[in-house]
Image (cartoon, rainbow, N blue to C red; front, top):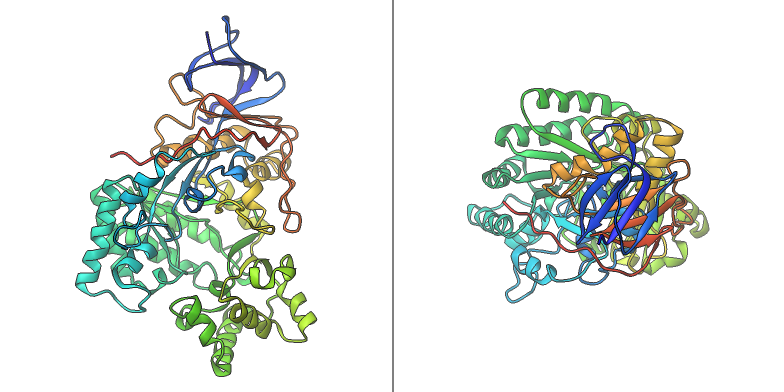
Length: 505
């Protein structure tokens, strides 16, 4: 007897090939038969007539590792069809802390603490460069000593030997932003020793975008490491169109034999901290307390303001405050709107928010062009992502956390026809499975894990917006993990069928 049969669905298997009508039989969490008309008894049957059946979506860039211990349901992942997430990007990970006896002391101790926790959605993770640096030398804005660099390498090797995919850089965030290219290369050499993967939030996605792309390509070429460009984009109107140049640069490296991919989310606004957006690297304080103290100096405020205006213009009207507990009543408003209420200019308002919140303020930055988004989405080696963890207790957040995959399939695939549905599913499933070593996921194929999405291709779409960010998507009928239904009509049923997956070498 089968556990589940999915009947009469339009199967798009993840390979990029055309879909076909058929049945899928599942036993013990694995796809055991695919045929036009499967006979035999089953504990459960889903009639998928008129619906599309695909592998479960793989979020190729998430921060879901931050949810494992406190929010293991990962509701927002499951309710948009994500059955596996890749965490640990942008240099930021829970481990290592370097604190003796802490469950997060090393990546290995974190894995041991996490591996037996049932999760709503599967998870695999990088180790973060900022975490390595903090463990070795705190938030110091300088080159590491030879001893400190060796400490970073020691923690990195430990992580690679205990289940990390590879290493992630977050080169706009402290303290990762303090590293020179030579430090990045030295750490990438360790990743290469383990045939691991390198990902990077590059050093600049605005006016120095091309130079930042070149820096990461230099690291790749110096070490031969496999790599992923995180949320590839070029920000601010004067820089729109530069992704055409960056993709040419990446293509050239691929033709020379380097293995490079990228991830992208289907939105015109990015999401990050207000501090990282407004305060450029040369003024970046060591930590949140340091930022608040720095902003008590009027002369320093003026210097930070001048540096921002020189690069990005004299308005912060493109910044939407989405999460700031100290000023929660202003969440969902643009900085210029708050400034008018306070009777101040945009910059004084932003500085007061940072100082008054201990720099605990996140924003959405409306700074990208639709043409660039479509250019990157259609790029052959681009994978789809949320670049988000889970909502936790937040009431306002970037809608990509809730709806990246339905938005991609609705707006960019069905409506704008940026890529075919078959190619879109490959970007959401088989491609990230291959890149991240998820050997039994990402395809509808006998012997593969029964992580599956069933949706109405004519209706699937996002409903979450920047204002009403909690709305569930439409058209997603069933989400299946390990052969069991975990969501129906985009509503999570509470089953935790996922787990933390240590990378095996």
